[in-house]
Length: 119
Image (cartoon, rainbow, N blue to C red; front, side):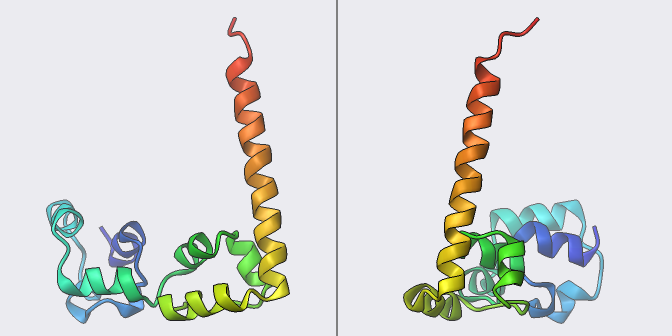
């Protein structure tokens, strides 16, 4: 698989990975090994970042669109994410509330679909 795909599936930012990872395709066996027995660089990236947008959004409990609305377009480190959570700017509070409402509505709709009798 392409390095970009592998990095996305591993939850890390491609630009932060070592050159030997970025410079070639990753076999399925290598990918499985990275998942089951991550090397130090992968463990460190997952722990401290910089993190891709999807991971930043997950850690802040907002959508990736919410990040953009908040003006966050660059990858963030774990430290930067923690600082944002401590500071809790107004945009982040608003986006977290919006994301919570969306999750609640999705859960309500899933529950409703589960109750529907099948034909």
